[in-house]
Length: 167
Image 1 (cartoon, helix red, strand yellow):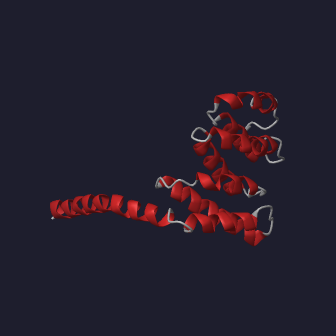
Image 2: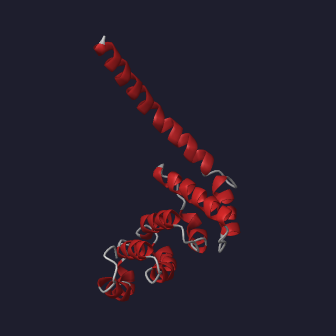
Image 3: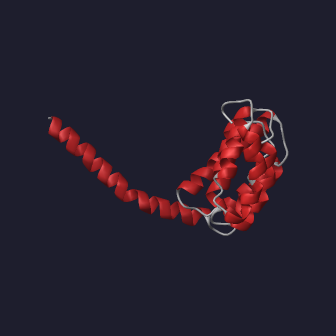
């Protein structure tokens, strides 16, 4: 009896893993359609840029989650880079983490876009919240773009003398 249960579980896993690439390719095609989901995300990010309302913070978090999920299935969301940077005005740590993940992921592939994020990361390195300071410093050091090294020295120096152990 135990063998039949485990063989059905293995069979289910094999069948599920075989269908996943088709679903992923279909999803990528749907998202990359002209005027599709990415255009909607871009418009919604522009609407939320600079907003601090409680409901907008939750909406921003959901948008960032959706963008990160597209990144995990290899959808090119680099066209949203400038809108993501404009939508960074938030004190929500979870949203900041997703933004930093997005920036570090796209920085080495698009070094010219990474330059846009330097000001945001440097500003966050001076934030009142030690968690945001630490996350921003880690992200700034993780950009992996050679011509941006000059922007690391001052935030790194400040991080070494920061009173918080997290930074």
